[in-house]
Image (cartoon, rainbow, N blue to C red; front, side):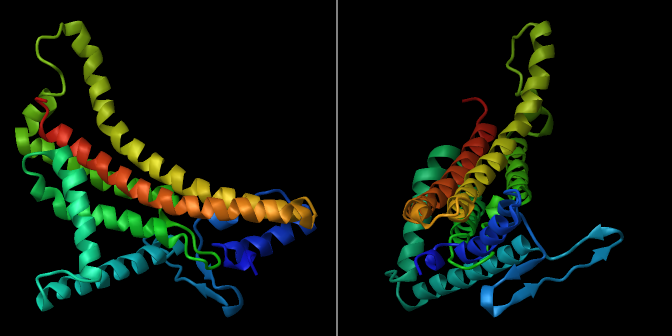
Length: 285
């Protein structure tokens, strides 16, 4: 009963049993953390997602895409409900109050200090980024079989980092113009031989920032799920029930830790994006 209440454990337990019985390699873990074209709901059955190609390109709806759509729909619904709360009363209550607290935190603690003057133009994107990453992270903690965290897919985090990259370059070009923005990457008055070295490094630095955003979020979110499956698998790999208390205890601890990690990673991703935008927007500092 305890095992069934832990996130993703029904699928993990079933697959772990098969892995132990067949003496197969531990690749069964990757089967549950990688993307797939179906979603298993345990005894309720399996949902097979559409699989199709267009002009030779695979446009199949995968599990992560489906979860992202669900998360987006939930966010839109909650945002509408929170906004309607202000039509009834200017004093926020319930959901509206919760959203206002989070919005003010993002504005006062992340966006305004990092971007500075003109930060209001970036608030819609920064709020969307924070809420989307947070809800995706938390969605992976729902105790249902075969539901993984979308931000544990490097393709998803790469897409988020790519959008942030565009926002960063846009802020710099808007502030200085296209030519002056890239010209400002190299400090004035430097010897010519140093400039030859600095230019490639600065251009490379433009891409390492979003790359760091991508890898940081992906690695932190997928690591927790791999650890959870590994701890549960120990019960069946070692063929003894005596390891169960230790395995389940550590799994519960990791689950609680994952909640904190989900909040921290949403904060870090948003904060670093705002910081990089502020660096591009105010290069003189």
